Amino acid sequence: AITLMNPQRVVVGGGVAKSGPRYFEMVRAAARANVLPGMTVDIVPAALGDDAPLWGAVVLAGDLLN
Image 1 (tube, one colour):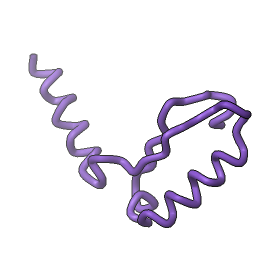
Image 2: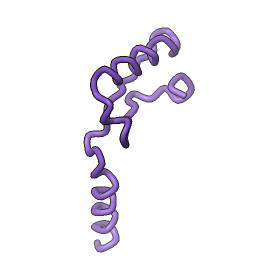
Image 3: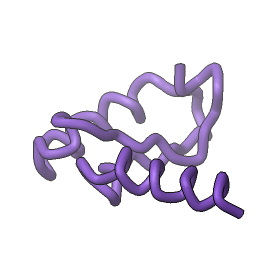
Image 4: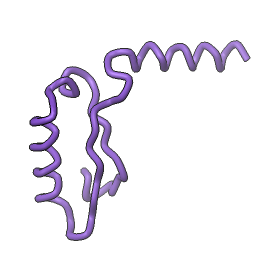
C-alpha cells in the first residue's frame, strides 16, 4: 500500500500505537525494505492517541453549530 499510494506519512493509531519504539523501528525497517528505491515514508504513532475520536467529535460538533 505504501508503494502504491506513496504517502509522506503513515499514522498508526489504536492499541498498536502503544507498542513502543521497538515496534516502530521494526515497522520502519520493513517499510524501507519493501518500497521502491528512493521512496521515503515517515511512520509515526497517532499524536492524539485514544482521544482522537473524541477530538474529531468536538470538531464536528463545532462545525455543525457554526
